[in-house]
Amino acid sequence: MPVDAEGMDRDPTGDIRAVEDWATALVAAAAALAGSAVTGYFGVLAARRQADAAREGAQRQADAAWNAALRQADVAWNSALKQAEAQLDVMRETLHAEAAAAQRGVRRTAYVGFLGRTEQARQAVLAWAAAPASATLRERRDAALVAVDEALNVLCGWKARRRSLRLPRPLRWRYPIPAWHISPLIPTS
Image (cartoon, rainbow, N blue to C red; front, top):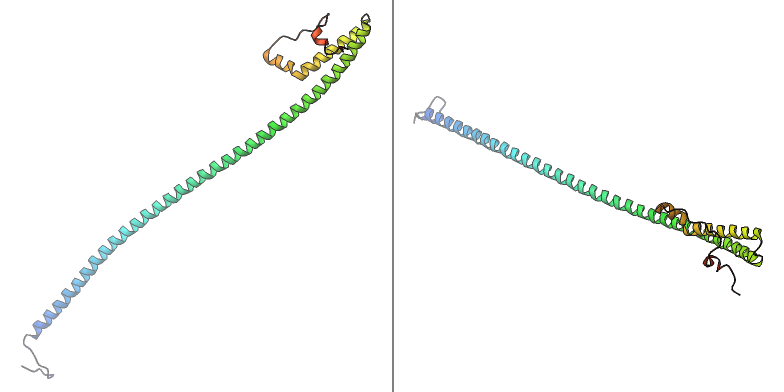
């Protein structure tokens, strides 16, 4: 083998080998670059798909959270409505109980008034029965019986029923007074 000036062995095909080595290096570099480009391209595609999947997952998660919030709001609204209805029911019952108590008080007062007027009428009837010819006693008796009638109307609510049924006014009793009306007032003994 020939030796060059520096003392190295010289191969006559050495220039060709250097070019081949150089070409091999270029092909390897190009292959590496092409592989990297293809890998990068597919990596970008995979990243896009992953981002799209993450976006869709986030959208589904946001929709599920929104629907859960709507359901929770509906449940809270229905619960609030039930509580309000329960409070209204309690208030209605309280008002009805108070109205019933007030009505009982009014009825008690009317009954006491009726009993008082009945006692006055009894006394007037007894006084008239002792002296039937007295016009003054007869007028007191009639006034007392009219007062009993009015108290009975208040007690029974006749006037309110008469207005609601549109009935004519009750008849005023004329002489003679029916026996069934005064018989409880006249002592039997």
